[in-house]
Length: 199
Image (cartoon, rainbow, N blue to C red; front, side, top):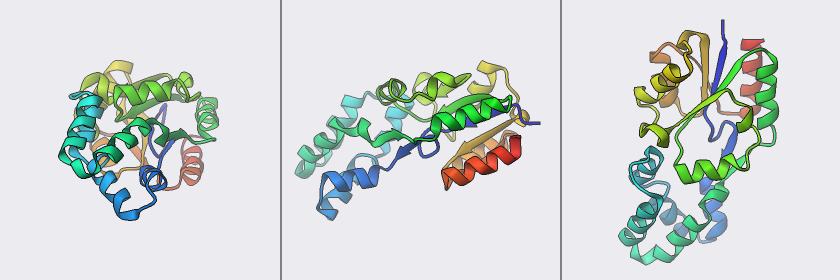
């Protein structure tokens, strides 16, 4: 029996359309691709989520490694928090799950700066029963330790939990630990599927 519903944040409860955002900022397609590859596509991006490097270090490194587009890179980072926008149905979805008598948790890769910015603006966050955000423990999905930290902190069992994420690799790691999983490719469809599972 499912007692716990665990949501990833990005592309599950919050839109993270970074490619479209960068393209809107820089109308030249080639420039947009270069900025995207140098920022979100950088391996250092995940290290900020891990909490191993500071955001300013990421900005400076990306700009210094790409001097021909350094101004555009810094312009992007100045607006990066605008990328993450809660889906209009996010709060209602969390409320719906809780109305079914389930606990709701968040398990997500996020930098401290970006998460705190989101927390002030996403009304669904105050409704959850707990959360494990990558920067707080310096582990990121799909590393086993971040899943285990959620289980240990809130004393929940994986076999009583379902995890929703948009990245198959993250779901595989959860499934290997005994979680039920649901791939989110279409948020509204996933909402219907989840309700069928937990109702």
